[in-house]
Amino acid sequence: MKEGTFYVTTPIYYVNASPHIGHAYTTITADVISRFKRMWGYKVLFSTGTDEHGQKILESAKAQNRDPKEHVDMYSQVFKDTWKKLHISYDEFIRTTEPRHEKVVQYIINKLYEQGDIYKGVYEGWYCVPCETFYQADELVNGNCPNCGRPVIWNKEDDYFFRMSKYQDKLLEHIEKNPDFVQPQTRRQELLNRVKEGMRDLCISRKGLTWGIPIPFAEEYSIYVWVDALINYLTVAGYPDDREKFETFWPAVHLVGKDILWFHAGIWPCILLALGIDVPRKVFAHGFWTVKKEKMSKSKGNIIDPVQMANSLVDKGFDWDIAIDAVRYFLMREVPLGLDGEYSDESFIHRVNSDLANDLGNLFFRSVGIINRYGDGIIPNTGNAENELLNIKDSIIKGLDEYMTNFEYTKVLSDIWDFIGAVNKYLDQKSPWSLARDGKREEFDSIMFNVFESIRNIAILIYPFMPKVSEYLLSSLGVELESSLKREALEGWGKLKQDWKIPEVKPLFPRIEV
Ligand code: MSP
View 1 (cartoon, rainbow, N blue to C red):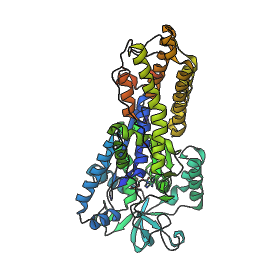
View 2 (view 1 turned 90 degrees about the vertical axis):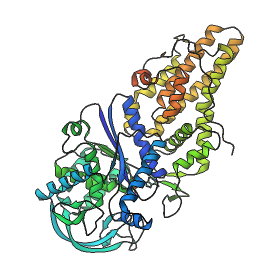
View 3 (view 1 turned 180 degrees about the vertical axis):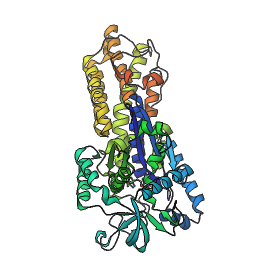
View 4 (view 1 turned 45 degrees about the vertical axis):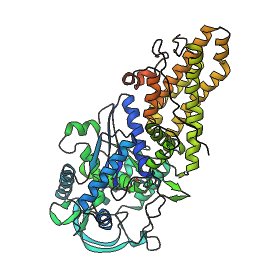
């Protein structure tokens, strides 16, 4: 990895249904860090995609009466369309059925086989199709899958195995030496415990399963879908042919849900160690969104669709782009990444009303109202900094890269909202409208300059979370976007355009009556 670069990944999603807020959550989280890092001058590679092979996908295609290829093409497009709607700025969208990926998977399997890390043995145990996971009898809970609780199937066949146990000690050492390799700490502890219990060799083949990548030296087998899927992160990084890209970006930061931590922080690093490649820079495992305390899932029928959430705001008078940003804001603000979050329509509406309409919206619209009424709509640029506000801004910027890199988004947003609160309070205390009425023009100008300069800074700070709201605010302030969405634009105080007349603005966040 070269200095100043950043590679972030989401899991690649199974193409058996449309995305819900659980999927959107990881993808938006990755989008926020990508937008932030680009703003901070990093060269970013942000990758997402779809996981299209395996028994689960084959069965879902059958159940929906579709040819598997047609099925995966369709759902993969649904994911792409949804990410477009949610303003996701990914650089790469990878599909595991693409030839470029199949080539890399086969290359890796051959390499591991040739170096003696893959051997043939007998697999005897259980398999959960919905989770695409092998289990031994002692891992089952009441005879069912310990992860999803559904029935498992018995499997006994000749199979190929990866010598995972060989890399256990190296992995353990890495986790122990690198306290931030897995975050949050509770998950790191879980992982440590599991690695210490001992790692069995991993079955990496499925006999007779045709919807998968064939094992190059034994074509009656396909490669276990999780091994196929994990390798996507290397394919995107250009491994093995594009050395330049690979050396620029690898290792990646993997964002995952807590249910798939073991695959990413247990199995995956062992494969990488066997290949002589650096393990991931970080694996961050987030929690689950629940509805009435139950994990969302298609089978329970309690799915929350992010696009429908946005539509519910459009019905209340929101513009589409602003409604999407409100969904993004809610998901990033409501729960610290790492904990579970309970979704309800009430909590969504409450956030939108209080943080967006009452705090941010109110600050902007009352400021514009004051300047229109008492200052001909022209933002004064007096240049006198109000230290109280400048200091708040500086203290946010100080730790920002570190907080963002540790995915402490709720802390960052709460700091930005404290800033918004401080500017609203500043307006109340200074009551510039009375100064204008009393003819104290200079004082009025100075206050309004500081208010709008604060709004400019706030608009830049919220950009990674709410890009369209940010762009709307900045363009209303006459600020050029390209030069504004940069770290330098947050330095100092007083980068507003001289004598800019604010155009007519529309209320961004209509208050939702409940
Ligand atoms: N295809 C695998 C990942 C392979 S990555 C090499 C997979 N796909 S998935 O579509 O089932 O899930 C993708 C992600 O969505 C996981 O990180 C999972 O944790 C997340 N979520 C699924 N339901 C969720 C919630 N209800 N809440 C939050 N995230 C959840 O696993």
